[in-house]
Image (cartoon, rainbow, N blue to C red; front, side):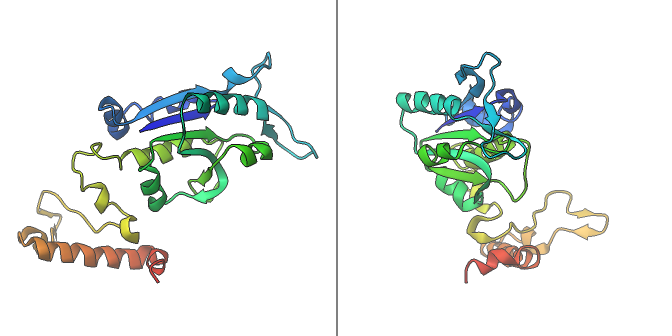
Amino acid sequence: MRFDIISIFPDMFTGSFSHSIIKRAIDKGLAEIYLHDLRDYTTDKHRSVDDYAFGGGAGMVMRIEPIARCIEKLKAERDYDEIIFLTPDGELLNQGLSNELSMKGNLMMLCGHYKGVDERLRELYFSREISIGDYVLSGGELGAAVLVDSIVRLIPGVLGDETSALSDSFQNNLLSPPVYTRPREFKGLKVPDILLSGHQAKIDDWKLEKAIERTRTRRPDLLDKDD
């Protein structure tokens, strides 16, 4: 799976993509991540990619030309399943969306900045606009890193245990049940006997019961989605 990320701060991704599961996916050849510095596509001698907004108001707007040049260059080289704009007013990222995008082949992402992009870019180029939450960040780089991480871990072969991602929180609209490891007792608190019983069917029933219980307590809105 290939990711092309357009950013004015590509160095921000160095740490995010150089460790843990994403690095493992890259090393295995299961994911390719290419970073594109938007400033390389401007003709401005100061490498500026923003300008004042027509109509006034505080804040700058990302200009059309550099973004269009970069997108069109990449599109000329390959087909993309989605061209994604990371923006606070996009559709909210959830597990279902990550599952859907993990089935794609090539994704392009633009990291927003300032007061956003010229509206005509949104009309001409983006097939999807995504937000990682109802808050505003300084730029779309952190959002893009979160989105890539949530997708890459779902690619077959990335995780050591192929079933691991299926038991994550938010799969089937449930939070994960409690988990335990050694020691069996710590400060008077013991691992539930059922998890030591060896009866897998009963263990699975217990996990489902606890997942529903935890979801009902902490995120009842997720259970409402099944109604």
